[in-house]
Length: 64
Image (cartoon, rainbow, N blue to C red; front, side, top):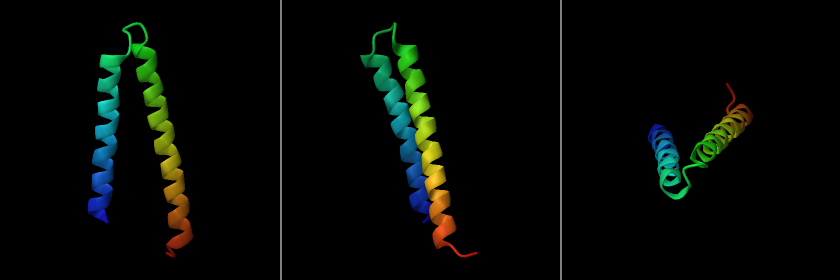
C-alpha cells in the first residue's frame, strides 16, 4: 500500500510539472501567467477534494 501511495504522489507531481511545461510551450506569452494560475487552482482544488474523499472513506471503513 505504501508503494501505491508513493507512486501516486510521484505521478501527481509529474503530471503537474508536465502540464506547466506544456503551457509554457503552447500558450501565448500574454496568457501564460493566467493559464499557470488556473492550473494551480485546479491542482489545489483536486487535491483538497481527494483529501476529503479519502478522509471520508477511511472514517467509514477503518474502525479504530
